[in-house]
Structure formats: structure tokens, C-alpha cells
Image (tube, rainbow, N blue to C red; front, side, top):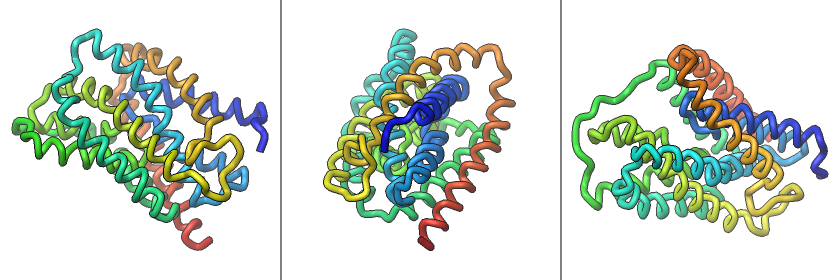
Amino acid sequence: MSIEPILIAQLAVLGLVTGFLAGLLGIGGGMIMVPFISALLSAREVAPGLAVKMAIATSMATIIFTSISSVRAHHKKRAVRWDIVKRLAPGIVLGAMLASVGVFALLKGALLYFVFGGFVAFSAVQMFLDKKPAPSRQLPGTAGLLGAGGAIGFLSGLVGAGGGFISVPFMTWCNIAIHNAVATSAALGFPIALANVAGYIISGQGLGGLPPHSFGYLWLPALVVIASCSVLMAPMGAKAAHALPVKKLKRAFSIVLFVLAMYMLYKGMGALSA
């Protein structure tokens, strides 16, 4: 498989769109990247079950780069609760490694289509309703945070997301101000991505059927092009958020997510029957 110009163009557009939407709506780019990367790989004769695994792993790898620029911006505003990051990170790393080294490699790709489709559908409902959980308690102790971190890292590893879909509601539920929760979630994206990507590389070694330019489950052309473009566009999306009706955009975009969720469930049915 050569890295043809049309592929670079497709990946660049995907990176620009996901970066802009991440900055504008505060969503994880994986919800957009995974369906499209899996489709690009399937079109290049990669088996459907392997394609979705590589798409999830590659999507997660881009978070390593995008989280750095995001955290810098939040840190300048002193919004990151580094005390929470330090307490959640150990559990996150353990959960992420368990998912990416163990469960991810053992699960059939067809099942991952359903897991991801369900995750996107859930996210679409939350985005459409624009629900914000009411704060009702304080953060748990060390054991509770270890367990919470483990759940965040584990679920993120299965769907290729940065963990914000769990960590932000969890922190706001524990009486952390929403702007601190969002900033802290951005900071948690780095250890989540780093631990999961290490696991994807380890568990993907020696697999048959991998396309050229792969490193474990990572598809390097997609990683390089998408990460470069998304990092450029995320700040522009963040600026646009102050000028555009974000609440209305979220509701419109939730419909797009529903379509993508149905597409992934459809692909899962196809992978089961293959």
C-alpha cells in the first residue's frame, strides 16, 4: 500500500475537521476519526475487524499531540487541578494498560464496532440534551480515585477516546467546577493516550494482515497527517466557539453522531457475518 496523494488529502481534511470540532464543541476527535479511518483501511483491503482496531489505536495516538496544546492553554488560565491529575493518573495508567494490552487484543473486531457505536450513540444523546450533572458530593479517597481512574483508562482504551466523556461528568458530580473539570480532563488525556498507545503497540506486534507503515495497531500515515492538521485547527475552533451558537451546533452535530453510530453498528453486523 503506497501513501498516495489522495490518501494524504483525505487524512488532512479529516484532521482539519476533527481539530476544529474539538476546539469548537469540546468533543473528542475519536468519535469522527474512528469511523472514517476504519472506512479508509477497509477500502484498502484491511479486514474489518483489524481496521476498527487500528482506527481506534490511531485515533488515541493523535490525543498525545492534541492534548499537549490544549493543556498549555488551560494551564495558562490556571484551570487545571493538578492535584486531581496526580491522584487519578495511577488508576488511569493501570486501566489503560489492561484494556490496550489485554482486552483490546482479545476482543473480536466485530464486538468493538458495537462497543464504539454504543459509545457514540450515548455521546450523541448527551450532546443533544446538553445535560450537565448536578454537583452533589466531594471527590472520593485514594481507593475511590484509583478505581475511578481505572474505569476511565479502561473504557477510553476500548473506544479510542481521551476520557472526557467519563472524567468531566465524574468530576462535576464530585463538586468540581465545570471549567476546572474540562481543563483537568484535558490534562488527563495525555497519560490516557500514552498508556493506551504503548499497549496498542505491544499487543499489535507480530500480527498478520497489517498494512504497510504500521507500528503495532498504529497506522502511521493517518497519525502523522491527522495530528498535524488537528493541532493547527483546534485553536481556531476554540476561538469560533465564542462567536457561534455552540448549543445549537451541538444539537445539530449530535444528529451527525447518530448517523456515525448507526454506520459503525452496521459495519459490526457485516463483520459478524464475514
